[in-house]
Length: 167
Image (cartoon, rainbow, N blue to C red; front, top):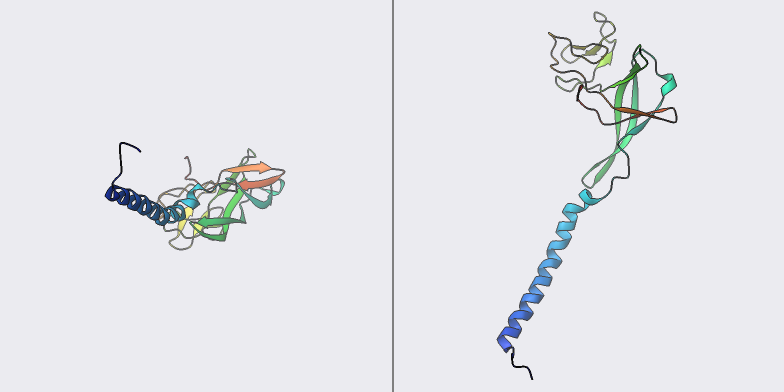
């Protein structure tokens, strides 16, 4: 027999500690996985979302395009419709602007105000933006419209997440 004998009391202590540890882990692990799992899942979609607009169809006049993408908030998935104003500059550079006014989040329209032609107009508080998205001084917006980064794949325009102009 062994020289280091385990008493009945020590055996019970070790057994209860082991069983209690397994039970605690069995309760904590599902909760931890439930909280962390969405963060660990790989994002199947890329950073850019396909629009239905062909790059060849983009003109110098801003045109509104709608695009759909799947949005995931924790465990809730939904299809969201995004919007952008897209046009080409005189140099042929594509510009994609967010329609969300930087004053209070209303939606801006192109050429919607008869007094201010060739400008983006926010009807909520009469905000004005130049064609390039720059806010007009003296009107409510304090910052320019956000800009979408873009890519062209197979002649189709892809848009990324809107970013502040100049960022």
